[in-house]
Length: 108
Image 1 (cartoon, one colour):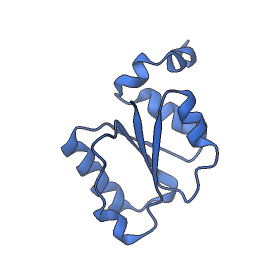
Image 2 (cartoon, one colour):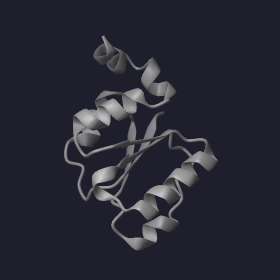
Image 3 (cartoon, one colour):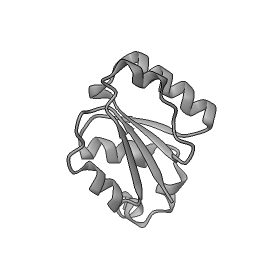
Image 4 (cartoon, one colour):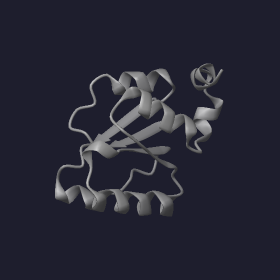
């Protein structure tokens, strides 16, 4: 099972369905608006953390980066557009994307 934690943005729109099309079975979303969200832990079953840089503060970004590094979870950064998200996931060191047929399709 492949799980993705998306941090940033109030609403994701169609992004979760597009992420499902490239193989992510579970998409967990945290808006990053509330100050208390800095204290949240990254769930242990998450395979990748995606930070939407348009909608998140620097403090939360640095805390998430440290938590992801400590847990050995890859982290990537993108703007809130499908093109940017896809490129970030495709270019980060994430084993699932290397094995996914849909990722290989776009690399050709």
